[in-house]
Length: 371
Image (cartoon, rainbow, N blue to C red; front, side, top):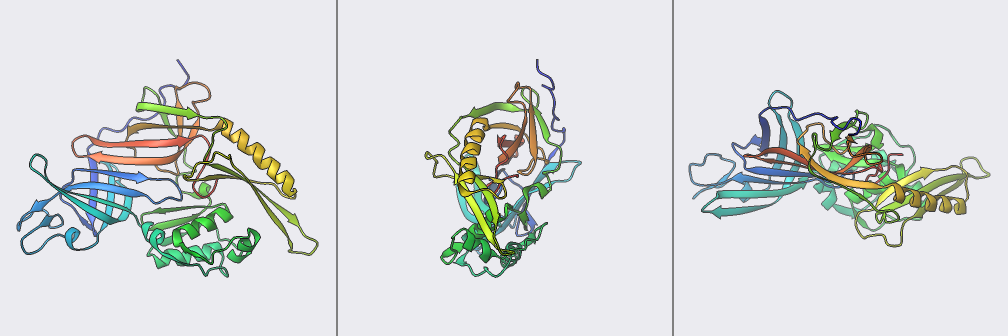
């Protein structure tokens, strides 16, 4: 009916491979798992269900409770890694994180099991709060110090040059109150037009277009071909409640090196209390009134054009929140390139691997835009 309506790859037929480790040791068996990749600038999370032994001679030393000793899950903390893929190809690291809580279920029909919930290693800077004292550092230097403090490897493809104190003063902001390291890095990313993402033990801080998957060709999906039901779209003109538009300008001063930075924002009065997404437009040498009018115009235009949606599909190792997708077979306007805003990767020992994703045609992220 439509051009390219059957465009897109099918999942290769191969045995699913799932590797779940507790403190670096692979568990012998598993029941199911779910990993939520919650978007750039957010903390990813996981949920795994594993078999449990009540025995002094367990099948797995990582998953038991005995009369004299028990697994580390009972007595201490645990670092959890989940990898998945298919036989004959490299498995992909889905998440590396820490256990937040464990729930045991002793069921006569289903048997004994433990459900472990946790978050990625971004949880450490998310939970750690202090009064920030990094004003005399650049954003990339401050990010590097914070990342190392939490055992993460800083990845910054571009080094910034402005001292943090400069835009704190320009924006009349203050960081003298106690704030989490995670929120502070998001504040730095917003001011630099960067994004922040923790994947495994790497903490990325830089332009979104320099993330590994962004330059790759979009993954193709077609309704009725390699998309599982349901495929949903939503378009709500003039109702982009979580959208903020910033117009940023710079007016040079009379003295060399002196000038005025202008930041004008626009958002709908019906804005929700949930996550806020920012689109930035840079226009040099305009007045504050001109910047405000531009911000309002951009907001109206973008809200008219915004399309969001969701669908389920087979598990592809290439899927990630820095990889674009191209939808086909749904007609003009809906068939276009989209950006993944949230990704859920799941596995069931009996039913295999699946993915579910949310997408938007506007290139939004938690702490910045693709501009």
